[in-house]
Image (cartoon, rainbow, N blue to C red):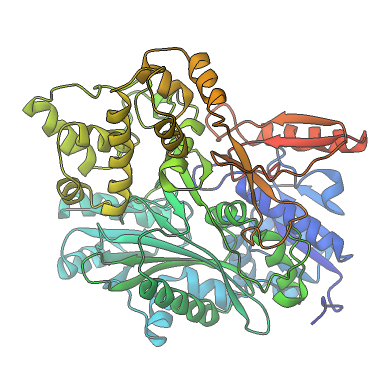
Length: 612
């Protein structure tokens, strides 16, 4: 069906200031929504309190309010602007919560404002833990055993009944704020009190633990005709117990069997239909690695941090499409801008591995607890793409800008490959891989160097053996490299390690030469980086506007262009002191170059940005 004609003016709620759990990915989604609505001729009213955003630029909306995102202020804006509809699904948890409270206060009914994308019942079903549990059971999907607490007394009774460890999930919070894992009653009481204070409605789901299970996510989209597509699956390398924003994530999921994948696809389609979202949703599952049992953890009935990652990972602009769906289009009516040929009813296809790795800034806070759990601590993330997991992993580590050039062998290791580990050091390694923190990936490396087997590391870390096998392969290649120098190194081995993500800096360290010598040898052997497209169709069609990533193969697929070009270097992952404001600068640099007739080439590793 075409875009709705009964709607003339749409109000969009932004996500407010950048905080942990809600960052520039919502500037990306909000900007996409504004552009999408503008294409259809709608009048746009935008409300946000963050001035360092592209979405608050004058050309993005007809009316822009830099005001606090509170019920009172937004009620006054609605009274003045009289929008026909409110789109709450692009402003993160802030947008959803504000829309919910505006509806509860009767503001939307008073001024005849319709919620589009997700109505109040859809939001409530996904966000209210009791309604969500009931809805999932109705469609035959298991949930962890749980109960709701509205007071400390209620929570203590529930904790005694369910047994430890327990997961605490406050309702209507973002980034897992207030969430935690409790292993005993003393810890439970303290954390429950905090969780109750964190929830704006003082509601906490107390949930039986599924720590150590696989965590799998699906990005799905649904239109008003009930058509559903899966954009991508994603798998957390860290098992359950780590917030997905703090976990290393790969797309597509790597360790599911075909049967498991098809089962989760079917569940995801049932879930989004039950919730009733028209647009995009992120669905999170826990999968028991021992028997394949599945429980659903939560649904985000909106564009999320994972949606930004999935969009960049597949070339499928989720926020733009979600906006088109909210105003009445169906998936088969929306053209895929990347390919220029297919519609959005075609599910994306990928022939590469995408790797998301979180950026922490614990160094800014000496003495801070670096343990990562169910409440998010990362301040940003980097994304890398490779033809295999090993390549994507090592590129991802380099992209963090923490002074590391891959998984070790870069002069920064605590212990080198020839180190003889003491029993005390082995105990430290076991502790570090058992309790997740920002350095766990490097301690997985040390575990292999210390002689631990894949089975032993899996026992301590609960990280799937498939991931551990690939990490071990990187270390095995490193050991093999130490047998040679730059002159005796076999060309086939050089090609093999470059395809597994080894940087020239790592190779120079291992081979005891400088980077120039490594580069010279590569060029002599014609081993060089080429660029491949992220086009959503795995090269089936020639894409009009794909992303590109580098890898070590033979054929380069970047089209020739005779226009003058300027390369813009982005700011990389967000961190304290360097955030969304540099994305703003990159976007405007690109606009200025376009006005002067130049092609702009944007280089960045941050999937949350508008500039990419």
